[in-house]
Image (cartoon, rainbow, N blue to C red; front, side, top):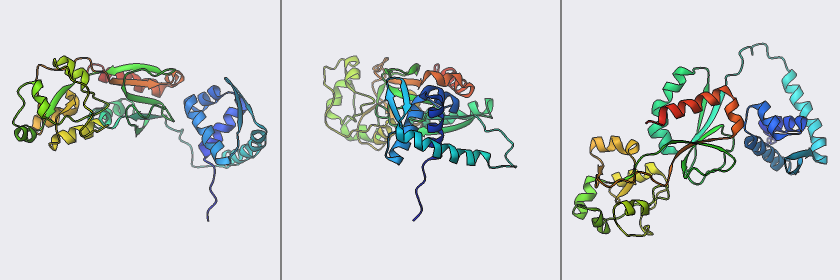
Length: 296
Protein backbone atom coordinates (compact mmCIF):
# COMPACT_ATOMS: atom_id res chain seq x y z
CA UNK A 1 0.00 0.00 0.00
CA UNK A 2 1.39 3.42 -0.97
CA UNK A 3 2.41 5.72 1.88
CA UNK A 4 0.27 8.85 2.09
CA UNK A 5 2.39 11.99 1.69
CA UNK A 6 1.74 15.42 3.22
CA UNK A 7 0.50 18.07 0.74
CA UNK A 8 3.46 20.08 -0.55
CA UNK A 9 1.52 23.37 -0.63
CA UNK A 10 0.80 22.93 3.09
CA UNK A 11 4.47 22.20 3.82
CA UNK A 12 5.57 25.40 2.07
CA UNK A 13 2.92 27.38 3.98
CA UNK A 14 4.16 25.90 7.25
CA UNK A 15 7.80 26.71 6.45
CA UNK A 16 7.02 30.30 5.45
CA UNK A 17 4.83 30.94 8.52
CA UNK A 18 7.52 29.51 10.81
CA UNK A 19 10.26 31.56 9.16
CA UNK A 20 8.36 34.84 9.41
CA UNK A 21 6.49 34.16 12.65
CA UNK A 22 3.45 35.63 10.93
CA UNK A 23 0.64 34.14 8.88
CA UNK A 24 -0.01 37.46 7.15
CA UNK A 25 3.60 37.96 6.01
CA UNK A 26 3.86 34.32 4.92
CA UNK A 27 0.63 34.60 2.94
CA UNK A 28 1.96 37.70 1.19
CA UNK A 29 5.16 35.89 0.27
CA UNK A 30 3.22 32.97 -1.20
CA UNK A 31 0.73 35.28 -2.98
CA UNK A 32 -2.28 33.79 -1.20
CA UNK A 33 -4.73 35.18 1.32
CA UNK A 34 -4.12 34.81 5.10
CA UNK A 35 -7.24 32.68 5.38
CA UNK A 36 -5.95 30.39 2.63
CA UNK A 37 -2.64 30.05 4.49
CA UNK A 38 -4.48 29.25 7.73
CA UNK A 39 -6.44 26.61 5.84
CA UNK A 40 -3.19 25.00 4.63
CA UNK A 41 -1.74 25.00 8.16
CA UNK A 42 -4.88 23.34 9.51
CA UNK A 43 -4.67 20.79 6.69
CA UNK A 44 -1.11 19.91 7.68
CA UNK A 45 -2.00 19.77 11.39
CA UNK A 46 -4.81 17.35 10.57
CA UNK A 47 -2.33 15.27 8.58
CA UNK A 48 0.33 15.03 11.32
CA UNK A 49 -2.20 14.91 14.16
CA UNK A 50 -0.36 17.57 16.15
CA UNK A 51 -0.52 21.32 16.72
CA UNK A 52 2.24 23.04 14.76
CA UNK A 53 1.67 26.54 16.14
CA UNK A 54 0.54 28.05 19.41
CA UNK A 55 -1.81 30.96 18.71
CA UNK A 56 -2.20 33.92 21.04
CA UNK A 57 -4.34 36.52 19.31
CA UNK A 58 -2.35 37.67 16.27
CA UNK A 59 0.88 36.12 17.56
CA UNK A 60 1.90 32.63 16.48
CA UNK A 61 4.82 30.59 17.78
CA UNK A 62 5.94 27.08 16.96
CA UNK A 63 4.89 24.29 19.26
CA UNK A 64 7.50 21.83 20.49
CA UNK A 65 6.39 19.35 17.84
CA UNK A 66 6.36 22.16 15.27
CA UNK A 67 10.01 23.00 15.94
CA UNK A 68 11.08 19.40 15.43
CA UNK A 69 8.90 18.94 12.36
CA UNK A 70 10.21 22.17 10.83
CA UNK A 71 13.73 20.73 10.55
CA UNK A 72 12.38 17.78 8.57
CA UNK A 73 10.22 19.99 6.34
CA UNK A 74 13.06 22.43 5.58
CA UNK A 75 15.36 19.57 4.61
CA UNK A 76 12.70 18.08 2.32
CA UNK A 77 11.91 21.41 0.64
CA UNK A 78 15.62 22.17 0.23
CA UNK A 79 16.08 18.85 -1.55
CA UNK A 80 13.28 19.74 -3.97
CA UNK A 81 14.43 23.30 -4.63
CA UNK A 82 18.11 22.41 -5.02
CA UNK A 83 17.48 19.69 -7.58
CA UNK A 84 18.63 21.01 -11.00
CA UNK A 85 15.87 21.52 -13.60
CA UNK A 86 17.74 22.43 -16.80
CA UNK A 87 14.61 22.80 -18.94
CA UNK A 88 12.73 25.04 -16.54
CA UNK A 89 13.43 28.53 -17.80
CA UNK A 90 10.04 30.21 -18.20
CA UNK A 91 8.75 32.04 -15.10
CA UNK A 92 5.49 30.85 -13.60
CA UNK A 93 2.42 32.62 -14.97
CA UNK A 94 0.37 34.76 -12.59
CA UNK A 95 -2.88 33.01 -11.73
CA UNK A 96 -6.14 33.90 -10.01
CA UNK A 97 -8.42 31.50 -8.16
CA UNK A 98 -12.01 32.69 -8.48
CA UNK A 99 -15.09 31.23 -6.79
CA UNK A 100 -18.53 32.08 -8.21
CA UNK A 101 -22.13 30.83 -7.93
CA UNK A 102 -23.11 28.33 -10.66
CA UNK A 103 -25.80 30.37 -12.41
CA UNK A 104 -23.67 33.53 -12.46
CA UNK A 105 -20.79 31.51 -13.90
CA UNK A 106 -22.92 29.91 -16.60
CA UNK A 107 -25.06 32.88 -17.63
CA UNK A 108 -22.83 35.90 -17.06
CA UNK A 109 -19.16 35.17 -16.41
CA UNK A 110 -18.16 32.41 -18.82
CA UNK A 111 -19.82 34.07 -21.87
CA UNK A 112 -17.69 37.20 -21.27
CA UNK A 113 -14.51 35.73 -19.82
CA UNK A 114 -12.80 35.78 -23.23
CA UNK A 115 -12.81 39.58 -23.01
CA UNK A 116 -10.60 39.44 -19.92
CA UNK A 117 -8.28 36.74 -21.25
CA UNK A 118 -7.84 38.73 -24.48
CA UNK A 119 -6.77 41.77 -22.44
CA UNK A 120 -4.56 39.72 -20.09
CA UNK A 121 -3.35 36.60 -21.96
CA UNK A 122 -0.57 36.05 -19.41
CA UNK A 123 -2.98 35.54 -16.46
CA UNK A 124 -4.22 32.02 -15.75
CA UNK A 125 -7.83 31.82 -14.51
CA UNK A 126 -8.91 28.98 -12.21
CA UNK A 127 -12.68 28.91 -11.75
CA UNK A 128 -14.48 27.18 -8.87
CA UNK A 129 -18.15 27.00 -7.92
CA UNK A 130 -19.79 27.81 -4.59
CA UNK A 131 -23.30 27.49 -3.17
CA UNK A 132 -24.83 30.95 -2.51
CA UNK A 133 -25.70 31.72 1.14
CA UNK A 134 -23.88 28.58 2.32
CA UNK A 135 -20.22 28.62 1.20
CA UNK A 136 -19.12 31.69 3.15
CA UNK A 137 -15.40 31.02 3.52
CA UNK A 138 -12.87 32.39 1.06
CA UNK A 139 -10.96 29.11 1.47
CA UNK A 140 -8.11 29.27 -1.04
CA UNK A 141 -9.79 31.64 -3.50
CA UNK A 142 -8.31 35.02 -4.30
CA UNK A 143 -11.64 36.55 -5.32
CA UNK A 144 -15.25 35.49 -4.85
CA UNK A 145 -18.48 36.63 -6.41
CA UNK A 146 -21.20 36.12 -3.81
CA UNK A 147 -24.96 36.30 -4.11
CA UNK A 148 -26.38 37.53 -0.84
CA UNK A 149 -27.06 40.50 1.42
CA UNK A 150 -23.52 41.89 1.15
CA UNK A 151 -22.66 41.64 4.85
CA UNK A 152 -19.29 39.90 5.10
CA UNK A 153 -17.26 41.10 8.12
CA UNK A 154 -13.49 41.53 7.80
CA UNK A 155 -13.62 41.24 4.00
CA UNK A 156 -13.58 43.89 1.29
CA UNK A 157 -17.06 43.83 -0.28
CA UNK A 158 -17.94 45.70 -3.46
CA UNK A 159 -21.42 45.56 -4.98
CA UNK A 160 -21.31 44.20 -8.50
CA UNK A 161 -24.89 44.55 -9.67
CA UNK A 162 -28.51 43.82 -8.89
CA UNK A 163 -31.56 43.30 -11.07
CA UNK A 164 -35.31 43.48 -10.44
CA UNK A 165 -37.04 40.17 -9.81
CA UNK A 166 -40.27 39.16 -11.54
CA UNK A 167 -42.52 36.13 -11.78
CA UNK A 168 -42.30 33.63 -14.63
CA UNK A 169 -43.99 30.45 -15.74
CA UNK A 170 -44.04 28.02 -18.66
CA UNK A 171 -46.84 28.36 -21.22
CA UNK A 172 -47.85 24.75 -20.55
CA UNK A 173 -48.24 25.38 -16.82
CA UNK A 174 -50.34 28.50 -17.42
CA UNK A 175 -52.64 26.50 -19.68
CA UNK A 176 -52.85 23.72 -17.10
CA UNK A 177 -54.07 26.02 -14.30
CA UNK A 178 -56.30 28.18 -16.49
CA UNK A 179 -54.08 31.26 -16.75
CA UNK A 180 -53.06 34.01 -14.32
CA UNK A 181 -54.60 37.43 -14.90
CA UNK A 182 -53.37 39.21 -11.77
CA UNK A 183 -51.05 38.46 -8.81
CA UNK A 184 -53.94 37.38 -6.58
CA UNK A 185 -54.53 34.46 -8.99
CA UNK A 186 -51.27 32.95 -7.71
CA UNK A 187 -53.34 31.37 -4.93
CA UNK A 188 -54.16 28.59 -7.41
CA UNK A 189 -50.55 28.15 -8.53
CA UNK A 190 -47.63 26.19 -7.10
CA UNK A 191 -44.97 28.70 -6.01
CA UNK A 192 -41.42 27.45 -6.39
CA UNK A 193 -39.43 28.34 -3.29
CA UNK A 194 -35.82 29.42 -2.88
CA UNK A 195 -33.87 31.13 -0.11
CA UNK A 196 -32.12 33.01 -2.91
CA UNK A 197 -35.34 34.58 -4.22
CA UNK A 198 -37.88 34.84 -1.35
CA UNK A 199 -41.47 35.58 -2.32
CA UNK A 200 -42.53 37.79 0.57
CA UNK A 201 -40.79 41.03 -0.64
CA UNK A 202 -42.35 40.49 -4.09
CA UNK A 203 -45.76 39.93 -2.49
CA UNK A 204 -45.52 43.37 -0.85
CA UNK A 205 -44.85 45.05 -4.19
CA UNK A 206 -47.77 43.13 -5.70
CA UNK A 207 -50.09 44.33 -2.93
CA UNK A 208 -50.53 40.87 -1.44
CA UNK A 209 -50.51 40.45 2.33
CA UNK A 210 -49.24 36.87 2.10
CA UNK A 211 -46.56 35.12 4.19
CA UNK A 212 -43.55 33.39 2.68
CA UNK A 213 -44.65 30.02 1.21
CA UNK A 214 -43.72 27.08 3.43
CA UNK A 215 -44.71 24.19 1.17
CA UNK A 216 -43.92 23.18 -2.37
CA UNK A 217 -40.76 22.42 -4.30
CA UNK A 218 -37.68 24.22 -2.97
CA UNK A 219 -34.51 24.73 -5.03
CA UNK A 220 -31.50 26.63 -3.74
CA UNK A 221 -29.91 27.15 -7.13
CA UNK A 222 -31.18 29.80 -9.52
CA UNK A 223 -30.44 27.71 -12.59
CA UNK A 224 -32.34 24.73 -11.21
CA UNK A 225 -35.21 27.04 -10.29
CA UNK A 226 -35.53 28.09 -13.92
CA UNK A 227 -35.35 24.46 -15.06
CA UNK A 228 -38.23 23.66 -12.70
CA UNK A 229 -40.23 26.56 -14.17
CA UNK A 230 -39.42 25.42 -17.72
CA UNK A 231 -40.63 21.90 -16.98
CA UNK A 232 -43.93 23.13 -15.60
CA UNK A 233 -43.47 22.60 -11.86
CA UNK A 234 -44.91 26.02 -11.00
CA UNK A 235 -44.27 29.76 -10.88
CA UNK A 236 -40.87 31.13 -9.88
CA UNK A 237 -39.06 34.42 -9.38
CA UNK A 238 -36.08 35.27 -11.57
CA UNK A 239 -34.02 38.06 -13.15
CA UNK A 240 -33.62 39.24 -16.74
CA UNK A 241 -30.09 38.05 -17.51
CA UNK A 242 -30.82 34.53 -16.31
CA UNK A 243 -34.06 34.01 -18.19
CA UNK A 244 -33.79 36.20 -21.30
CA UNK A 245 -32.86 33.35 -23.66
CA UNK A 246 -35.73 31.18 -22.41
CA UNK A 247 -38.17 34.07 -22.85
CA UNK A 248 -36.88 34.65 -26.39
CA UNK A 249 -37.46 31.00 -27.31
CA UNK A 250 -40.91 31.04 -25.69
CA UNK A 251 -40.11 28.28 -23.19
CA UNK A 252 -40.81 30.66 -20.31
CA UNK A 253 -43.13 33.67 -20.18
CA UNK A 254 -42.97 36.65 -17.79
CA UNK A 255 -46.05 37.31 -15.66
CA UNK A 256 -47.53 40.62 -14.48
CA UNK A 257 -45.06 42.95 -16.30
CA UNK A 258 -45.96 45.88 -14.03
CA UNK A 259 -44.98 44.00 -10.86
CA UNK A 260 -41.22 43.92 -10.33
CA UNK A 261 -39.21 44.01 -7.13
CA UNK A 262 -36.74 46.80 -7.98
CA UNK A 263 -34.48 46.32 -4.94
CA UNK A 264 -34.45 42.61 -4.05
CA UNK A 265 -32.87 41.47 -0.77
CA UNK A 266 -29.95 39.77 -2.56
CA UNK A 267 -27.44 41.05 -5.09
CA UNK A 268 -24.04 40.06 -6.46
CA UNK A 269 -20.93 41.23 -4.62
CA UNK A 270 -17.19 40.93 -5.18
CA UNK A 271 -15.51 39.72 -1.99
CA UNK A 272 -11.80 39.45 -1.21
CA UNK A 273 -9.27 40.04 1.54
CA UNK A 274 -7.58 43.44 1.39
CA UNK A 275 -4.01 42.19 0.71
CA UNK A 276 -5.22 40.39 -2.42
CA UNK A 277 -5.71 43.73 -4.21
CA UNK A 278 -1.95 44.33 -4.00
CA UNK A 279 -1.40 41.59 -6.57
CA UNK A 280 -1.59 43.09 -10.10
CA UNK A 281 -3.46 40.12 -11.58
CA UNK A 282 -6.12 40.22 -8.84
CA UNK A 283 -6.51 43.98 -9.12
CA UNK A 284 -6.89 43.70 -12.90
CA UNK A 285 -9.59 41.05 -12.59
CA UNK A 286 -11.56 42.92 -9.91
CA UNK A 287 -11.45 46.11 -11.97
CA UNK A 288 -12.62 44.20 -15.04
CA UNK A 289 -15.53 42.65 -13.12
CA UNK A 290 -16.65 46.04 -11.83
CA UNK A 291 -16.39 47.67 -15.25
CA UNK A 292 -18.13 44.79 -17.04
CA UNK A 293 -21.02 44.04 -14.73
CA UNK A 294 -21.93 47.22 -12.87
CA UNK A 295 -23.83 48.45 -15.93
CA UNK A 296 -24.81 45.05 -17.27
